[in-house]
Amino acid sequence: MEWTRSETIGLASVQCTTCHGLGLRPVKKGKEAPCNCVLRSIFRACFRRFRKSVEQEKHLSQCTFNFTGGRERSMTWGRKDEEYIADFLLMVRRLLSDDEYRIFRFHYLLGADWRLCCVRLKMDRGDFFHYIYKMEARLGKAFREVEPYGLFPLDEYFHGATRDVVAFTPPRVGPMPLRPPMAA
Ligand SMILES: [Zn+2]
Image (cartoon, rainbow, N blue to C red; front, side):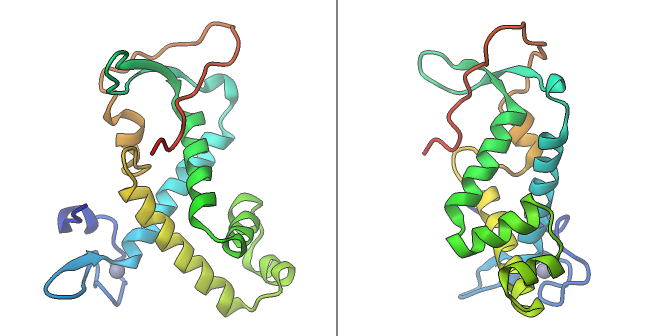
């Protein structure tokens, strides 16, 4: 996929010494790639949304009627927050090595700060942040580029293909089937 400056400039860090706030950095033969500050910013936005989805009261979760593009049944019911949580966790688990996932779990899912992580995982501070920066950039890139349902931009994930969403409070029946997350 193509990354454009109009997309990256709003996500870049103005203090970044690599892209100077433009969000793109030169790679080979006149080509440009998104700067790590942009990729980390995407990760953080997706992680904030993940926490919000996890923390919200379950009775607030809405069932929505979504366009799926299938040949026979192009619309289906789904619960976007639950799908998002599943997609997020599945991608993290697939993309990270076992060692990286241990760090991710302690720091992001269990909420341990860097000191606790370093003691528990027997790492020094420099290595810990090196891993964190690398993981955030890799996950941010994947969240944006994965096909066919990228997690980012979040408004497209939650509303992009469902402009005509019908908000619906589900009746008290059994659990609704979820669209398989991350269908390849
Ligand atoms: Zn940058």
